[in-house]
Length: 458
Image 1: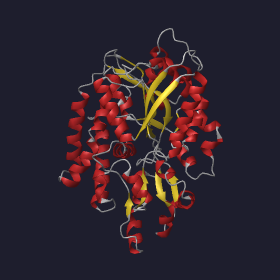
Image 2: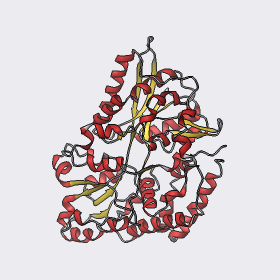
Image 3: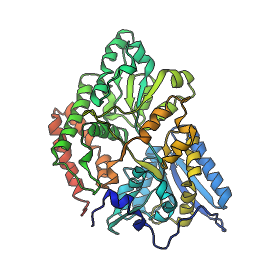
Image 4: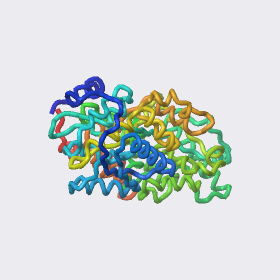
């Protein structure tokens, strides 16, 4: 297979498109048809309401029907895997974070090329959205669009500002580099426990071996902060032999497991699901958490005091080298499995959904938990940077700052790395099995190399 480079994806994307397909605005169909959609349940009820409105608006405009099934995140993942395995599929999947499924499905030639759908909005999409929507295919031996990107997410810090003040600290004094920023909260634990909060911890980090997303996401931001973001490069190649990369992984495992051993992290984090850190934050079991999107905060929006006065959202400090560090994010949206019976209706719905005004209104309806895959919408619509909301502006600062894609945008093998929870298992090996951080990383690197050997690039 030829090498897949970032330049090829962004600049040469015209070559990905189906020959003879013309970009066009959404046009209603003359003959009504129905497509079956499986979609993830929103973290807040407004997301589901926004989806239903988008579907209703599309049906009114087109005469087509979208028969949707809304499912929780975990069960949806399981159903999609089962459907792709059996071939008994709906017409369209829609996921917020499809990183453990989508790259491998594209690689295994189980998805429909949607380049003709993306074409009309391609020039407006962020570079990260493009990279997280195009994937290599082992059969066609090239890279094409398999995702119609609608939304993106970033990872901010979630902090109880009132607890910081109660401990006698001021967030304005928080250090500007990664490890020092995390360390800033540790002394608060002892002070607050002495004031009666006996079950409180400083940090709510997810060191899970269960996942699927939060533990991986946390760990990779530590790796980036330590200078290891080139573990996979845009050409799809793995760089475990790079001493800087190896050191970044060792430092990341060491910091996180040391925090656990020193008692700054709840003991049950090794088995947390993706909702456990949210729930713990809501119960004020820890001072700070690092978790993707604004889901943690939006779940509290009806509690005006907690949402507007007590909780704080903060963006990323600099990396440990003192330089600005990029956030890492993926893209969510719709993708079509091979075997779908109504591919054209599924494409038509996603073509409608990708229109900037439709995309923007849907994500605003979901209270801004996800931001548009078209960055210009953030800057042109006052909603996104409205300072009357204490959380969206710092969240959008990450969205509009430097970002890099999740690693499996470069190679589908990383999706399997995520699915196997190799870094949560490495942390477990240090905490429970007595391995050193170096030994645990070397063990995980060995398995990573085995996985990558199954995916041939170049």
